Image (cartoon, rainbow, N blue to C red):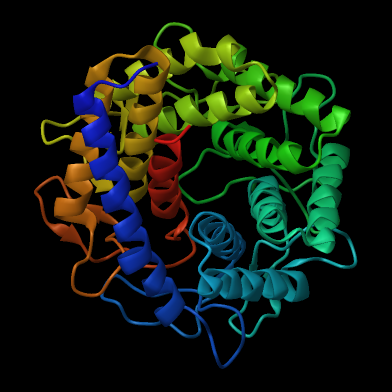
Length: 401
């Protein structure tokens, strides 16, 4: 697809600004503020007022996403400080998060690195596969690839549902049944979720690029079909969020951020399989469904559940990040310039509202009344450099694809 002069100019501007934001604001915050020089690894939390909480638990998601962010940034920018951060994360993960007795990884640690919650959450194991795959891409380190493959094999052994397809959510430390399957208290306690499948899809896509195994390829293809045939609602184009064992949807909420995120991650997976054209129609339908959550200022609302009278209009940092990437991807698929304009508007909203120009990084969210949310973390269990780093890198690299 040939770019118009206007599109070319718009993308070049976004690319330059995104790389500037990444290298001058986002990553420097994590380099300077997060390393725990006393107990090792990284602090578990910095609160919304930029105060380090030194005794906070150290979560698997945070550590995996730090590893991914700095590995990916190093591949693009080649700053040795990024490689040093990635290696610090990898070494800490190997030493503390891996369960040498039963296999897999812990959900979270105490601040001193001792295991705190030892359950096997497939969502977080998938993030370790994802992050380790990218560290291997950055360095060629063979042990990192071996450990990523071992985690993949554990997911396939314990979590894959050979009868109904897909993956079960969580297990005890010993890989037995567990009563509470949830990632967080706000989730439904169901055996299968869109969110876990989305990030298993993401992890398997990255692993396949460096380890072209036929079994992995088959399972990734199955995941793509689960999304297109089951998770995407045929009537609305939105994603179902929670499912029982037999893939009956058990939720009515719409997550606009997950919609737009899935619209482009699904394309990445199909591309890795050599089947890029097969999902374009579905991906555009999902992006169009996410479009329903747009506010008048170019931002994307968080979530809505009409059946429960719930509409969260806050503008979360990660949702806006995914909006930029997803809208650019929709433009590239369709050639419709209006998608690119939506991406530019979302990016403008981010730079005007979410970027912390004083202390660095981004705020968790902007409330519907326009005020900054300082009650939620600046860095923590769920507030990581992953979404905004990935957005900056995707904008820089998609321009050249």
